[in-house]
Image (tube, rainbow, N blue to C red; front, top):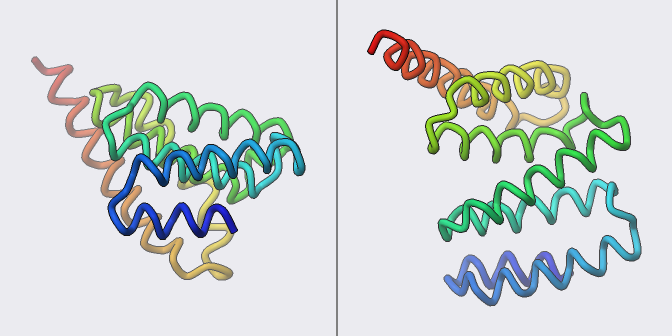
Length: 147
């Protein structure tokens, strides 16, 4: 329920308070559920998204990486738990000009999502967006190489 309170607080525009609530929620979840539980991974990514919105990119990247490692540690590398940290890292890499890393992350996302589209209709939009992102970063990378 703390995650829901954080989401509402964030929607109301109080990002600092939302971050505090997400941090409290994350601490409780890690203690009760363990560091690799899907709920913990989801909360880490929500907090990372919030940090990225506030241009706290170092903190955001650290949380996305932590969530990625947690998903990998429990053999969820091909599971939907892995998608949110990969999407977040891809956005950060594209924004910072790390096009090769972004391309690799997009490819990983595209390897996971099609398996689950029939179960979650929203994934079709994510796949389409990831394909656009992959095309965009490929073009940016090629332009950089030409220069």
